[in-house]
Length: 209
Image 1 (cartoon, rainbow, N blue to C red):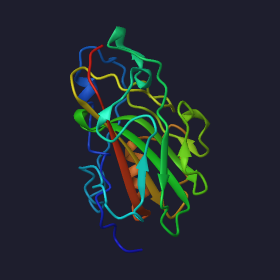
Image 2 (cartoon, helix red, strand yellow; image 1 turned 180 degrees about the vertical axis):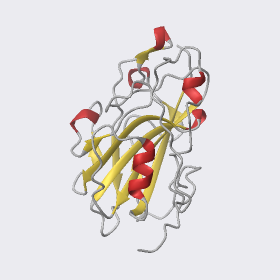
Image 3 (cartoon, helix red, strand yellow; image 1 turned 45 degrees about the horizontal axis):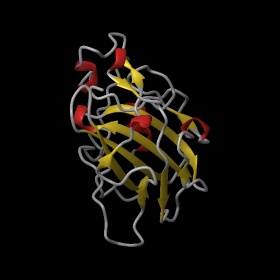
Image 4 (spheres, rainbow, N blue to C red; image 1 turned 135 degrees about the vertical axis):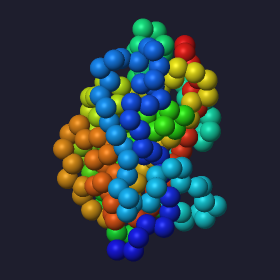
């Protein structure tokens, strides 16, 4: 397979950064290092949007790209730092690349060095959307969030203003075979040489509540 030419970025290298640096973050937050292998394109930025109507894209009926995420999508955690319902927003993606076998989803806080809020892999190619609040019903396997270390969606809970939450969908040419509770590092390593395309949408949220 040809080397990936697009930037697949949002899984930036972290080591207890961002939200973990907040005094209100739990001391027991799991350490999840998300450094990509040296042979993998540096995941340092969001995939650039394309004007091509046939390009792989992800959208949401719940927020516009660059718009504010509603409070219901935030977590209820850290002693009132956020007081939402921890409901995952709906996502839809289209123009699936030929040869796609599975999709993977990653949601990270790019204002906190790629802090992981949601991971899901091995979503069948026939699935092209996830409804609001249905992250737990997605087929495939869930990875762990970085706040509680559980295989679930963990909503935004920013310690400061204008945090950028990037939802990226990866079209992959294989099943990754990851086990439930995999980390961001596990995902980056497993996706190496398997990404056909990546598309992202960004939501913004400010805190504390």
